[in-house]
Image (cartoon, rainbow, N blue to C red; front, side, top):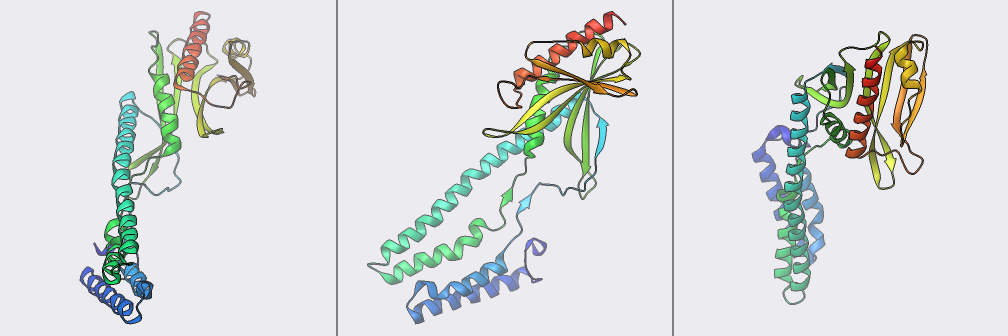
Length: 295
């Protein structure tokens, strides 16, 4: 347990003895001076000695950005782990609220009782103060990467769209590393390719960004058609495509052409729901089938 204490290099027994002595000194000051608040300083010092580092599963960001192709099963496993983390966080929140209510109840009871029995009120007041480290120090914090979780739900929706035979959808995850050298997923992309395609077509990449919405951060998925240059049949076909509710933006250079297909934002902000992502995937599959037919 020693390594979990925030301050000073003391053993557990030494900390408990010192904290008990400080609590006793606080009571002595309260009784001698006739004030419940007279012993607050030694109580704060005792809390300093008993302060614990919170336990958390949040990895330290090392700044690595390694993109790697993974299987659908790996994406499903990560989605399941995030779902478990959210359930655990919800299960922890309930007891934390009860602890706050318990502490507030003790302090309120001490105030009410102190009018008729000052000593009894002092006992309840001290009980609340002395139990605070046991109630709140060393809490467990469940980390859920909020932005990655928002994106992942949209990618899973797009991945679940049925694909015709001859089309390959490859997930790519961006990994960081934690202190133990384990992979930490941070971002995701999808690459859609037909097995038979024009020479200038690289594939269609599905990406997602996080934008500010009226009620907070929201995910926004879009597709990027990647081609070799801007003179081939695939680039020409996608550059001229049109679909209701979507905008098509051609760009790139003579080496690599790009055609961005994204949801029309004329009637609102940059926000895509699961249905929008499924619709985008279906649209690009149909467009690829037309391009494949002319290959």
